[in-house]
Length: 143
Image (tube, rainbow, N blue to C red; front, side, top):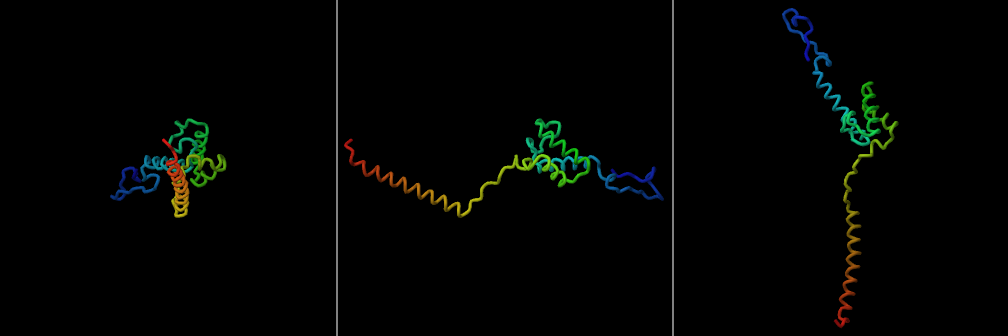
């Protein structure tokens, strides 16, 4: 909120404003930004159960509450996101990063396609030989 410097708001007939960041920026937006940063950090940390989507009140498992509590505590002390991440990795281990991580889909390379083609050819040869056996001995049957 823009606050005027003097009581009346006018000094020498000119309106003056205080443009300090804390005072000129809307407080609710600062809170929204902090909440967003916390959500982003929690998603990056990949909390054990919620992935950073739940607030601390809805964190139902023990480890989820511990991670959320640690992040809140360190964030309130003014730690940077990198420091919080490093500290949480020290406390909870790398599992905090990779538990909810979904690996990317496999990349289909030309080597992979050649291997698949080889398996197909082996299968085709096997079934061709089987089919020839069936045809060969079919005429020997009397029924």
